[in-house]
Image (cartoon, rainbow, N blue to C red):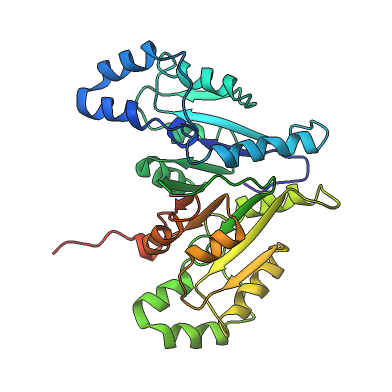
Length: 303
């Protein structure tokens, strides 16, 4: 899904990513679908509290206002609710003044099959199965994790990405996992002039870049690469992005240091990483999406 200057940036997310539905989900898990449906219908006029992706969505939609109302960004709801139980979600969308008009309610089925028809660049959900389905079908996707974040007051929308297995393929990470740090470093130095293959979030980053280019100055969107790599393994990353004609606003080569404090300092609205350990560090400070892709998430065979 390559973006052009005239193409919209389309982000899809689940209702539990947009709003806090923890209480109603507990009803579903403990009492079943019928009780859950009754719970939602009885409370459909009660406004839901914001969820993990709410701040990011609000800032995304605000980009249109900064482009003279041009609809360059669209947010779509893909929900396992039925339309009946989803009415509470739409009522809450209206309450907060969010410009979200398109949705798919699938009554318990995975909604990932509607990602392609809606031309989505990114899918965010709290359901790991739906996220894996989206990734397997070539769409950038992440499982949003509960965070201990404080609300970000900045008007800037700040995305942060891990490198290997997120922006880039996991070709280098495989060597690190299977052969160790020295083999990884030697390979990266030898391959410095050879661009890495794209990972699951390359097309989303490219679409963001197209949107950023529409602002001559004071762009409301910033991007950051936050990677465990350090010199001399940095060169291949820099030259890969240059070969892709993609510019990253900030690049942090941490050499294995804990990422959480750096993400807090950057003020990320959301951070994407393939490794659970990094996600657990990040979620203490910023909204975090786990990308279940690459060798770090390969299912181990039994026997």
